[in-house]
Image 1 (cartoon, rainbow, N blue to C red):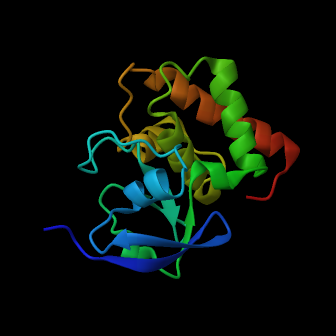
Image 2 (cartoon, rainbow, N blue to C red):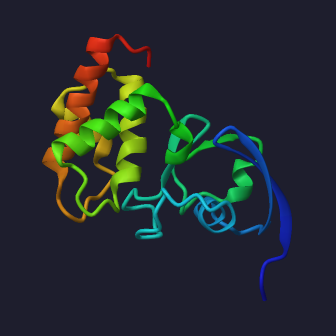
Length: 164
């Protein structure tokens, strides 16, 4: 028997959205299937790989493990929602320049996690970056370049004196 659908009001990327979803729908399913926001990827579906990472209340969460209903009335930000955020732009540019984007499957989760890190620690050292990204798996083993990209973005932001 299918779960009964109910109206769910979410605030995603700054926009109020209402959708009809089962009470047991995950945030990832709602984002991808109902709202057509595809940056968060369905990887392991067990919260291990980090490909589905989004921000809820300003905290990175695994959207594959988070019930959509639990996010009602709370701000949800996906990679698409960062728009012109200077920190995210610096991270994206650094990822491209450093060659950190290989197959791209892990990239959105890495970027969201790295954005959270730089918001808390503007100039993290290598160990801090590795620890922050440890819950995000890269199938292509691009970790060295990903860490270098985060360091490069932090340096670029520091030289621009961007407020995080």
